Length: 196
Image (cartoon, rainbow, N blue to C red; front, side, top):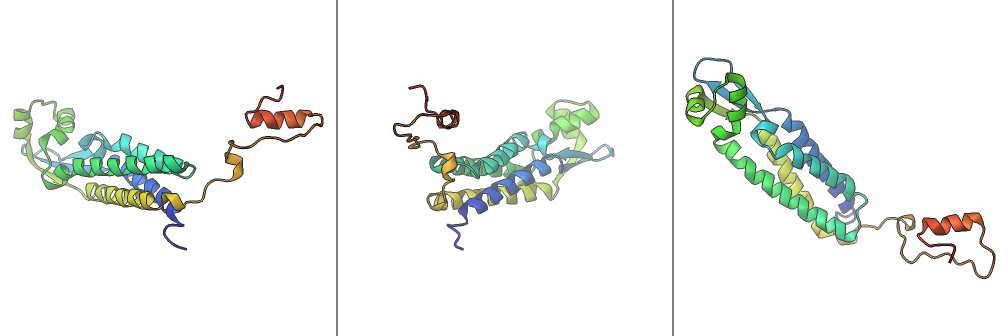
Protein backbone atom coordinates (compact mmCIF):
# COMPACT_ATOMS: atom_id res chain seq x y z
CA UNK A 1 0.00 0.00 0.00
CA UNK A 2 1.42 3.39 -0.99
CA UNK A 3 2.10 6.25 1.42
CA UNK A 4 -0.61 8.32 -0.27
CA UNK A 5 -3.21 5.65 0.52
CA UNK A 6 -2.01 5.37 4.11
CA UNK A 7 -1.89 9.16 4.56
CA UNK A 8 -4.83 9.31 6.94
CA UNK A 9 -3.57 6.61 9.32
CA UNK A 10 -0.01 7.96 9.23
CA UNK A 11 -1.29 11.51 9.79
CA UNK A 12 -3.48 10.58 12.73
CA UNK A 13 -0.75 8.40 14.28
CA UNK A 14 1.91 11.07 13.86
CA UNK A 15 -0.24 13.82 15.36
CA UNK A 16 -1.28 11.65 18.32
CA UNK A 17 2.26 10.45 19.01
CA UNK A 18 3.72 13.96 18.90
CA UNK A 19 0.96 15.31 21.15
CA UNK A 20 1.37 12.46 23.63
CA UNK A 21 5.13 12.97 23.85
CA UNK A 22 4.54 16.69 24.40
CA UNK A 23 2.05 16.08 27.21
CA UNK A 24 4.20 13.45 28.92
CA UNK A 25 7.35 15.55 28.65
CA UNK A 26 5.58 18.59 30.10
CA UNK A 27 5.40 16.77 33.43
CA UNK A 28 9.02 15.61 33.39
CA UNK A 29 12.21 17.44 34.40
CA UNK A 30 13.55 19.50 31.51
CA UNK A 31 16.16 21.61 33.27
CA UNK A 32 18.35 20.95 36.30
CA UNK A 33 19.54 24.03 38.18
CA UNK A 34 22.71 23.56 40.21
CA UNK A 35 22.84 26.08 43.02
CA UNK A 36 25.86 28.22 43.87
CA UNK A 37 24.91 28.18 47.56
CA UNK A 38 25.41 24.38 47.81
CA UNK A 39 21.67 23.80 48.17
CA UNK A 40 19.84 20.89 46.57
CA UNK A 41 19.47 21.03 42.80
CA UNK A 42 16.22 22.52 41.52
CA UNK A 43 14.34 20.42 38.96
CA UNK A 44 12.27 22.39 36.46
CA UNK A 45 9.46 20.53 34.63
CA UNK A 46 8.74 21.13 30.97
CA UNK A 47 5.47 22.96 31.61
CA UNK A 48 7.38 25.52 33.71
CA UNK A 49 10.32 25.84 31.34
CA UNK A 50 8.08 26.36 28.29
CA UNK A 51 4.64 27.75 29.11
CA UNK A 52 3.12 26.86 25.71
CA UNK A 53 4.12 23.21 25.90
CA UNK A 54 1.11 21.65 27.65
CA UNK A 55 -1.69 23.61 25.93
CA UNK A 56 -0.24 23.21 22.44
CA UNK A 57 0.43 19.51 23.04
CA UNK A 58 -3.22 19.06 24.00
CA UNK A 59 -4.20 20.94 20.85
CA UNK A 60 -2.07 18.57 18.77
CA UNK A 61 -3.78 15.58 20.40
CA UNK A 62 -7.16 17.09 19.55
CA UNK A 63 -6.04 17.68 15.95
CA UNK A 64 -4.97 14.05 15.69
CA UNK A 65 -8.28 12.77 16.98
CA UNK A 66 -10.31 15.10 14.74
CA UNK A 67 -8.15 14.39 11.68
CA UNK A 68 -9.52 10.86 11.52
CA UNK A 69 -13.02 12.15 10.65
CA UNK A 70 -12.17 15.50 9.05
CA UNK A 71 -13.49 16.51 5.64
CA UNK A 72 -11.28 17.47 2.72
CA UNK A 73 -10.76 21.17 3.43
CA UNK A 74 -10.54 20.65 7.19
CA UNK A 75 -7.67 18.18 6.66
CA UNK A 76 -5.76 20.89 4.88
CA UNK A 77 -6.42 23.40 7.67
CA UNK A 78 -5.38 20.88 10.35
CA UNK A 79 -2.14 20.14 8.51
CA UNK A 80 -1.26 23.84 8.28
CA UNK A 81 -2.09 24.39 11.98
CA UNK A 82 -0.01 21.35 12.98
CA UNK A 83 2.98 22.51 10.90
CA UNK A 84 2.77 26.00 12.43
CA UNK A 85 2.55 24.50 15.94
CA UNK A 86 5.59 22.31 15.29
CA UNK A 87 7.61 25.29 14.06
CA UNK A 88 6.52 27.48 16.99
CA UNK A 89 7.34 24.87 19.64
CA UNK A 90 10.60 23.84 17.98
CA UNK A 91 11.75 27.44 17.65
CA UNK A 92 10.79 28.18 21.26
CA UNK A 93 12.81 25.21 22.49
CA UNK A 94 16.11 26.05 20.81
CA UNK A 95 17.26 28.50 23.53
CA UNK A 96 16.43 25.91 26.20
CA UNK A 97 18.66 23.36 24.51
CA UNK A 98 21.56 25.63 23.55
CA UNK A 99 21.87 27.97 26.52
CA UNK A 100 18.92 27.84 28.91
CA UNK A 101 17.96 31.37 29.97
CA UNK A 102 17.43 32.34 33.58
CA UNK A 103 13.84 33.34 32.76
CA UNK A 104 12.98 29.69 32.02
CA UNK A 105 13.86 28.61 35.55
CA UNK A 106 13.09 31.80 37.50
CA UNK A 107 9.59 30.76 38.73
CA UNK A 108 10.89 27.42 40.01
CA UNK A 109 13.84 29.06 41.77
CA UNK A 110 11.54 31.65 43.34
CA UNK A 111 9.18 28.91 44.55
CA UNK A 112 12.10 27.00 46.10
CA UNK A 113 14.19 29.80 47.57
CA UNK A 114 11.74 32.66 47.97
CA UNK A 115 14.13 34.96 46.12
CA UNK A 116 13.02 37.16 43.24
CA UNK A 117 14.67 39.51 40.79
CA UNK A 118 17.28 38.67 38.19
CA UNK A 119 20.25 39.81 40.32
CA UNK A 120 19.26 37.64 43.30
CA UNK A 121 18.48 34.64 41.09
CA UNK A 122 21.76 34.97 39.20
CA UNK A 123 23.62 34.72 42.51
CA UNK A 124 21.85 31.46 43.34
CA UNK A 125 22.35 29.73 39.96
CA UNK A 126 25.65 28.00 39.28
CA UNK A 127 24.53 26.21 36.11
CA UNK A 128 21.43 25.20 34.16
CA UNK A 129 21.58 21.86 32.37
CA UNK A 130 18.91 20.40 30.08
CA UNK A 131 17.90 16.76 30.50
CA UNK A 132 17.00 14.41 27.62
CA UNK A 133 13.28 15.29 27.79
CA UNK A 134 13.48 18.53 25.79
CA UNK A 135 15.48 16.71 23.12
CA UNK A 136 12.78 14.04 22.96
CA UNK A 137 10.11 16.74 22.72
CA UNK A 138 12.04 18.43 19.91
CA UNK A 139 12.10 15.09 18.06
CA UNK A 140 8.31 14.94 18.52
CA UNK A 141 7.93 18.39 16.95
CA UNK A 142 10.11 17.32 14.01
CA UNK A 143 7.84 14.28 13.64
CA UNK A 144 4.77 16.52 13.84
CA UNK A 145 6.13 18.81 11.12
CA UNK A 146 7.01 15.86 8.86
CA UNK A 147 3.55 14.36 9.43
CA UNK A 148 1.87 17.68 8.64
CA UNK A 149 3.83 17.85 5.37
CA UNK A 150 2.74 14.27 4.59
CA UNK A 151 -0.90 15.23 5.21
CA UNK A 152 -0.48 18.28 2.95
CA UNK A 153 0.88 16.04 0.19
CA UNK A 154 -1.70 13.25 0.49
CA UNK A 155 -4.98 14.79 1.75
CA UNK A 156 -6.62 14.67 -1.68
CA UNK A 157 -6.12 10.91 -2.04
CA UNK A 158 -7.76 9.97 1.26
CA UNK A 159 -10.97 8.02 1.14
CA UNK A 160 -14.01 9.95 2.22
CA UNK A 161 -16.37 8.80 4.95
CA UNK A 162 -19.31 6.57 4.17
CA UNK A 163 -22.66 7.81 2.92
CA UNK A 164 -24.08 7.86 6.41
CA UNK A 165 -21.88 10.89 7.24
CA UNK A 166 -23.15 12.94 4.30
CA UNK A 167 -26.43 14.82 4.22
CA UNK A 168 -26.25 16.71 0.93
CA UNK A 169 -28.16 15.27 -1.97
CA UNK A 170 -30.04 12.77 0.21
CA UNK A 171 -33.77 13.00 -0.28
CA UNK A 172 -36.44 10.48 0.36
CA UNK A 173 -38.51 9.55 -2.63
CA UNK A 174 -41.88 8.33 -1.49
CA UNK A 175 -43.72 8.82 -4.73
CA UNK A 176 -47.45 9.35 -4.26
CA UNK A 177 -47.81 6.85 -1.41
CA UNK A 178 -48.59 7.66 2.19
CA UNK A 179 -45.76 8.57 4.55
CA UNK A 180 -45.58 6.51 7.72
CA UNK A 181 -43.93 7.41 11.04
CA UNK A 182 -40.64 5.69 10.20
CA UNK A 183 -40.33 7.58 6.91
CA UNK A 184 -41.10 10.84 8.70
CA UNK A 185 -38.42 10.11 11.28
CA UNK A 186 -35.90 9.32 8.53
CA UNK A 187 -36.70 12.59 6.79
CA UNK A 188 -36.19 14.50 10.03
CA UNK A 189 -32.82 12.77 10.46
CA UNK A 190 -31.83 13.97 7.01
CA UNK A 191 -32.87 17.53 7.81
CA UNK A 192 -36.05 17.50 5.73
CA UNK A 193 -39.37 18.68 7.12
CA UNK A 194 -41.86 15.83 6.47
CA UNK A 195 -44.87 18.10 7.02
CA UNK A 196 -44.26 20.01 3.78
